[in-house]
Amino acid sequence: MAKLIDGRALARQIRQELKEDILTLRNQHNLVPGLTVILVGDDPASHVYVRNKERACSEVGIHSNVIRMNAEVTEKELLDTIEGLNNDDKVHGILVQLPLPDHINEKAVINAIKPAKDVDGFHPVNSGMLMTGQAVLEPCTPKGIIRLIEETGCIIAGKHAVVIGRSNIVGKPVAMMLLQKHATVTIAHSRTQDLATVAASADILVVAIGKPQLIDDSYIKKDAIVIDVGTTRVNGALMGDVKFDKATEKAAYITPVPGGVGPMTITMLLENTLIAARNSI
Ligand code: NAP
Image (cartoon, protein in one colour):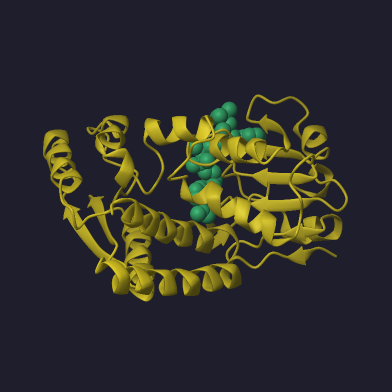
């Protein structure tokens, strides 16, 4: 029976450490890390995510501010707002909550954020730094995934890691981080042939697809570490990409949904905001 990798417990422990580090920064440098979130439109899920981020910030002593813009805001107005934040010394982290309305070019918006304040780690400068082993601000979900894997005590070097999903925010960066930790990495996606055989060769299986319950035990090698990134709301309940009950019979470690990757994502955002604040000194 697989052991649970408890993302909530790990997140709690890291947040406690962050709280102490933030207090030290305040005492030694009179500096309070500041995060500004820009929320465009009224997507209910985005509002929930932003509220959670605000709550998490206040819990550890980060000053957070939310700029709410209506869905009709022009791209120019949004870019001007980002420019103002880029030049504001009290703002160390800038996050634009995605998705954006269709008339706004998401790439242009991400590219407008000063890389040193890009706490989501999505700016091409930060992706390039990650790619070349110079990362300062790594994307939050992949960073959280690595911590969850390391929490098992697993030595990543030499293991075969299979990442299912190749998005810019999860699949590609987590594959790059696993490679930097010397795993042998396979990236699978919707065109991968015989996905079950590929997945079942993994010592570490990261599933970031967004197709609830797609991965059953036939995709899992005995004693593998399984990280389920998927979160899809089905009839009001949050569902992962992995059939949890089946997977626990085969895996050595597994993350639950909810309570696995999700809490770590926000925690890594807090950590990135602290890193950005420290780097501003
Ligand atoms: P995405 O941009 O939609 O990417 C999904 C990836 O899955 C794509 O690369 C796609 O392949 C691949 N895929 C789709 N169907 C597949 C199939 N049947 N077999 C194999 N691969 C398949 O999604 P994302 O942003 O990476 O997010 C993935 C999931 O993680 C979502 O459920 C999302 O909600 C969740 N998520 C959770 C957190 C968290 O903090 N818990 C954070 C981020 C994302 P192609 O490239 O070939 O289309």
